[in-house]
Image (cartoon, rainbow, N blue to C red; front, side, top):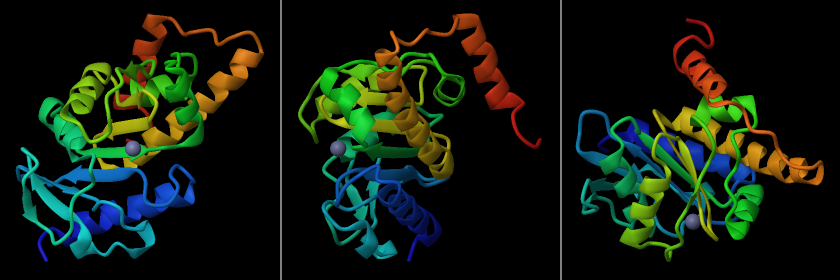
Length: 215
Ligand SMILES: [Zn+2]
């Protein structure tokens, strides 16, 4: 089987997403860019994460055409393809229906840039994209617009999308965004979140991208 490693990593990320309760059942979807190819590997539509095997992962070209796979790709493939075609820094997309992000999505409220780990990993606040029906090209375009300069977006009345350099980092992004969504709702009870200054956000983002961790 071609690209078995990356197909396995897509499935592992799906299981982590399920175990962290970021999705229920078969909802949510995951994809990764295949290095050196104009292809992405994406989860199939409506198959339990526990039952997906590597050959169930669908390979699409950058127009969404199925290149390899015996199942239908996730209905959100236009959303994934739109992100890859507009963001060359993105190699993985994780789309969740996590509870607190869904609350923000229902209220159509952005997550303010008010907590350090969020601004480090996402690059600022998390905006809400304009509402469009699931699976539409328009949803993809709206998500790309609201994702500008960020690694995550809230899809109105729907959920969260994280877009990052690889699957591990993108999974971390959707977890941090979910935590920030939860904390934002609690902060609201305490009188509202106080946003960080732009200079401080830029400093922390740069530190995270260039200096953080064991280098
Ligand atoms: Zn969805």
